[in-house]
Image 1 (cartoon, rainbow, N blue to C red):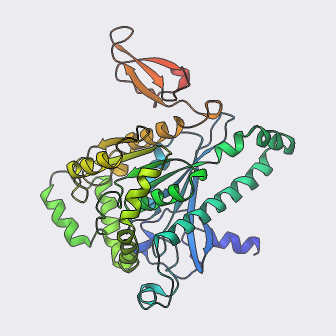
Image 2: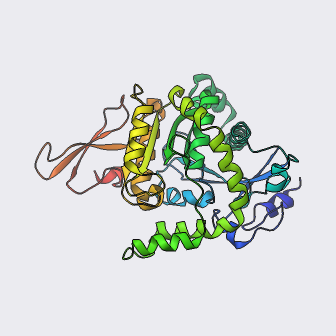
Image 3: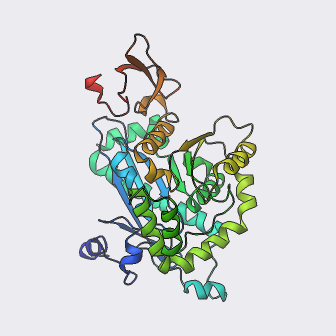
Length: 381
């Protein structure tokens, strides 16, 4: 394929598989995107890299969105993620700028195309992982002396850093669990936002009428960023609805397997819940998850304020939780500090003690009360 052809494919708004209206495009990240051929379907994926002054390699987080959403669901992470992170965001088939699944929804129903089963989705994510590895390998050869590259491979550091964290939301969280169970060697950890499949599989968000009814019940909150994102998804459901129902059936068919898989996944999971969610009631969710994950101390649950989506309700706190989860799993020599509050009014009144989340790192910071170590530059400490 020529360079000019590649450039056209990566232009904002370009879609080599056919036109995409503003409804579907609205839930996809804007800007240059990459393309992946998977079993007859052209998939769109986008990456954002937060450059780091540190010599350690970027840590990759592969993001899998919910039904009727798109890669834009993870936009808040781009703004709030720590330096040294590579965020990779995929649009599922029929969502955002990805093509419809071959044969369309009707073809799947009529048996004219392979159904989008959970096994197919796991293969799809694995293909994305391979594509990301290929991009990183090219960048490494372009930017690192060959002798240094061979030396780093021999120490095992580069191979270790290529294990990725998979962050999934709703439906995407269910696929993330299935992928981690099938490919434990490629997954460093999981971040699961309101995980459908482990929780009762909530139906895809419907049209705008139902959303407006919910907004009336919560009047006074205004059009917050979380509400605006929910509106985008509700409007885009007009186009994503058919394929979303197909994917929803795949999730329902594999729900028992997913709950079994969650008990076998050894990599640490961070599960995020929304305190006021109507789709995933918190008390019911906590009851199910605590029972399911009993005996697995490496997994953690955390609750966010709001009733929409923790990624949008509390974007900064979500990004910090994700970064802390990633850093705590990395080998000591390539981790970045992630901070947790370890002591209030200590060692003196009016200051707090912060410690790095990594269990093998003894780094500490003492900051004035009200300061967040994850937001304050090291030089100011």
